[in-house]
Length: 109
Length: 109
Image 1 (cartoon, rainbow over the protein chains, first blue to last red):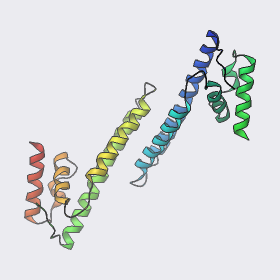
Image 2: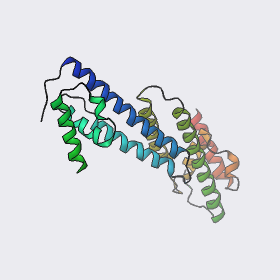
Image 3: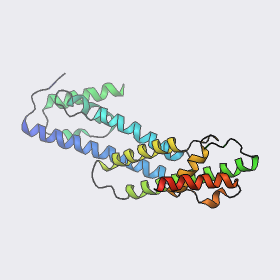
């Protein structure tokens, strides 16, 4: 399931959806760090925040791969995880949107 | 310059000075993270905080070595960096305190 036929307008839509998801996810991590910083109790808690950031960074680096050959898969994960809605993809071809939906459902199963 | 002759009372003093320095340094890192969290501007800033924490953790893991064979050296660094004062060591033998002072001066040069 690869789509190499991205029109210029689709590329713009994809880029915006991708960047918005990235920004939302970073914001969520930021909020979690802020919350944990407000709850430091034991001397190890600061390093637990560091562990948390290390893990998130690894996950994000792996997930946010903007190559057109894999982008449908990336959007499938992002839709499943709630970082994008199907509306963010509005303007992509029907078959691309259907493929993203299908992948998100697969993750959900 | 090794001191293996730590009395029970000296061990108590050393432990408290060591733990206090660790707590102060962690507090300073915590404050720095809080400050940086309040100044997030670019999308990379969160990962710069992560880099900062990684660096601090490496430094701290290397520095805080509580073995009696190296403790005088550790205190020399901590005195030089300002994480302990000479008063924190009050109760250690004169020769130990003098050795810590000498090491701190060497770092300062």
